[in-house]
Length: 247
Ligand code: ADP
Ligand code: MG
Image 1: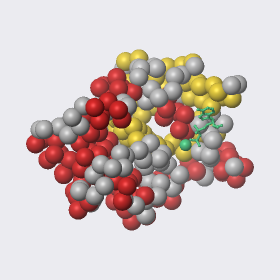
Image 2: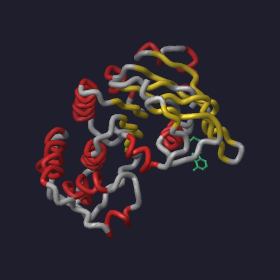
Image 3: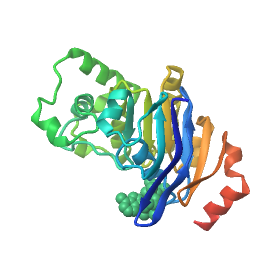
Image 4: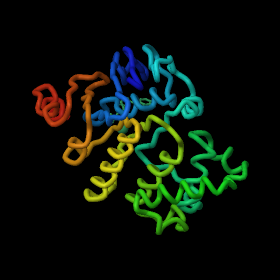
């Protein structure tokens, strides 16, 4: 397992946003976390990627304890995350947004702007264009992020993650706002990246689209993992149907 959580808990004023969560993420696979709104999915990602501190429990990555390490340290170790709401720099072009992603892993925007934000190496530019091509948005390379559609911004967000040489991609609703056809394309690309040894931990609502691409599914409700399994059969379990109907 590339990543494991052990009895991971997070409390907000007495609310158990995460309640002793145990998950295992296998290398070279796509692991999906689903659950109704407010069930703790984003909190789980935030705690794993160092954006929130755990109150109890442990996170292990490649066999090492990474609990409560800050995001930039996790980035250095090969973990990168994307956000439920993309956070591009709106005045910068698509290409620039990819280039600064490499310079500026998960840290403040200010740091990126006070540094020379465009790395000089040709290699970074070449890599950025390869990724834009891979995502089918190379024609938008010179467009300011503020002029993009929601789906295009989502692709830029994914492109920024791919600019890192990360091994583990943690993605919060990567397909939100993306049309079905493109969503299938992106998931297909993720599978190709898995073949190349990359690993994905994703939260996604669009079960109709995503289930056929994933290797393992965890279902959350009220901060707990209530079911797990391999694919479509998980969402047919009575306890899962119940939390979705109740939500
Ligand atoms: P999901 O992503 O599954 O919709 P979240 O992880 O965002 O759920 O939220 C889980 C619970 O934790 C919700 O009840 C939410 O209101 C609460 N929560 C999340 N973040 C915070 C925060 N920063 N402060 C207080 N409560 C929070
Ligand atoms: Mg969420």
